[in-house]
Image (cartoon, rainbow, N blue to C red; front, side):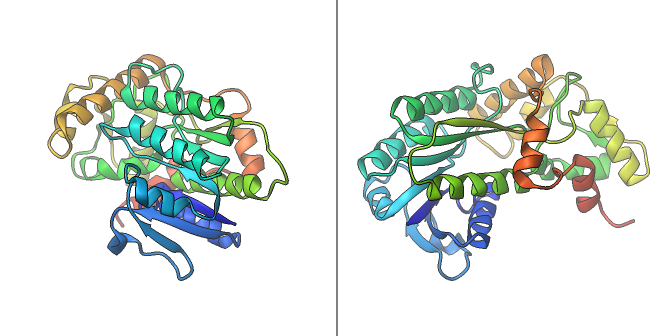
Length: 289
């Protein structure tokens, strides 16, 4: 049988495809633009999106297991619900869904509330599912690296409670492991939720200190006020989305994004290796001295 991957040209989805192929899975991807679908031979490509009913029905034909990743969008909830309904209609009952950590707590942040709604639908529709709840992606720091390198300032308002940032490579590998486990199970497995976190829970000052060490010069934390963060985002994304990201940052500051007891140990056992660290990432992307 075949595993369908949505969001396959993005940072996580692309790596999920690679991890599945390493494990010998038959993979199909649903993509808006096939010209961006730079996948190895053997990956089946279906053109369409999560609101294209005909494309979804085509994509689900012969599929047993779904990796559902839908990006932040104004119609994200509709995309998720349509896709899950069509999956069930097509006989697909095994799902790995990429949600977000604290989806049940940060309910004023639209894409957190959306993902909690999708989680509830997955449960009530009786899917055999793994809910993956990742923390803030370490890889998001690519968006602010020029500020760090050129102005010696860490601008993300993540606060002093701590955020357990996670590497997308760890997200993708856990996702692939769970997809294969669901796919190969002889019967229906119970729903499980896995928090995807990094090994270190870092404050804004902690991150600035890491960059100071890596770059060999002082890097300051820009502070907890999300106003400038929102204004900067609004220069390259819709204002509603920039405001939504501000709401998320406000929750980082007020609540943090802190793992539950045992999360890191559970992930290390699933992967059979240590988790990627923020410091490792910083050394990987830092300019050569």
